[in-house]
Length: 295
Image (cartoon, rainbow, N blue to C red; front, side):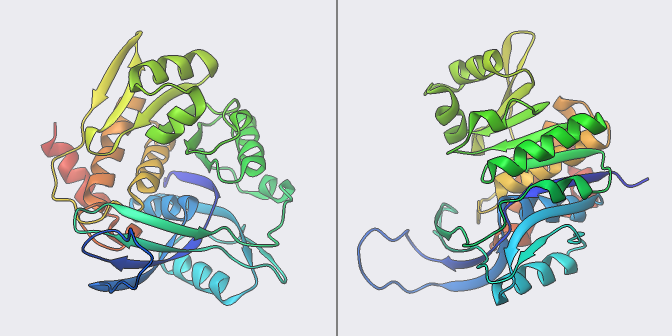
C-alpha cells in the first residue's frame, strides 16, 4: 500500500534566472537562461513525495488569481492531491524571483501573498496519512497539522527554517532544522552546541541539514554526521524542501531516522544536479539504486 504524507505550508511560483554571479549592485543584469517553475517549501516537498512513489496531500493557502491557477495546475500534473488547497476570493498568491549563480548558490526575493485565509479548521478535514509535514512559514497551520499528527499517532515533522515561532515546534515528533533555523532557535553558532540545546528544549527528535556537509543528529548523546553523496552541483534551489519531503515519506513508510536521513540526503543531492528547483527531483528507482550502491 502506498504511504501518504499530509503536507501543510507554502506553495508559490518561482521565476528562476541563471546568472554568472549573484546581483550585488543596483544595475541591470542579463540571465543566461530562465525558467518558470512551481516552488514553496510545502509544494516542493509534496512533489518530491509524489515522484518518490508516495501519496502527497497538500494543504496550502492561495488566492483565486492567475498565479494560484498556475500553482494548482502544475501540482496536479505532478500527481499531488490539491483538494485541500484553500482558494480565497480576492486574495493574491505568493511568488518569488530566484537568481542562481554558476556555483549553484541562490538569492530569493519573495512576495508572501496577500489576503490569504488565516483559518486553520479546514486542516482537520484531511484524510488520514502515514505522516504529517509542516513548515514554519505559517505557524498556526503548523500547530494544527501537528496536533492532527498526534491524534493520528503518526510522525509529525517540522521543516524548521528561520524566522520561526518556537511554539510551532513543541508539538512535533521530529524537527529538522536548517543551519539558519537552528541558529534562530537556539542562538548557538556551532552545530554541535545548537543540536544539544534544541534537544534539551524540545520533546521530539532533532537534526540539522547543512548543505554539502550533510545532516547532523544526536544518537546516545553524541553527534552523528551523515554526508550526502558526492555530486556536481548545478542548482541548490528547493534542495532542503525535497530533503524534507523524502525524509517524511521514509518515516511514513516505517523507516528509522538514520535510514530516512540517508534516503533524504540522496534524494536532495540528485535534485541539485539539475537547474530549476524541484524540476530536478529524482524518481524512486533512481534513489533506490543509489541507496543500494551507497550500502
